[in-house]
Image (tube, rainbow, N blue to C red):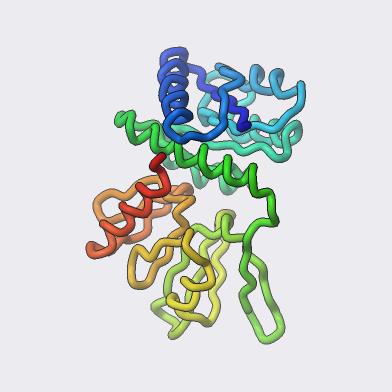
Length: 249
């Protein structure tokens, strides 16, 4: 069973998110339970001293709490190395700050006015975490050539998106979670076959990792690091359907 910790420093928001998360648990059909509601990072750390592995939904900005954001996550990982941390924040620009710190969260959610959308996002992470709990196999990865005798291995979860390089013929660039950009000789069609179904063809020259999608608005897809990638008009319906399929119970 997934054990969930929910943390937000605002009492009203914490109650609201608790209700939405409980609805998402029922809708997802996953075996999951909220085991801790916390308003400070210290409360979270005190709870996990008892051991165990958890799925965390954490507000990034915990007010005056001395263990805020990145510092809190680092301490959580020391106590719970296998923990899955999802930042729930109203500040979309915080994603890049988190990535630059070297902290690797499980994902990002935006605090939205639309409660149904929040529930869908909770469902998505519940299903992802539940699946990985049942299938603890080695993380999927690909190996790409960056030189005559030099190869690099990338886990699929580390790749945000891949796009064609306009200035270099028959080349693509892998954009990774830690901000790296790796350009190789290849085509977007071939890379799409290598990456598999978890990557969406949102544009003739762009493949995006659906795990890192925050939203699709105005022809642009917003990713977990606040990057924006284009979505062609003719691909918007397909992308929306794929996103919805991943979020539905």
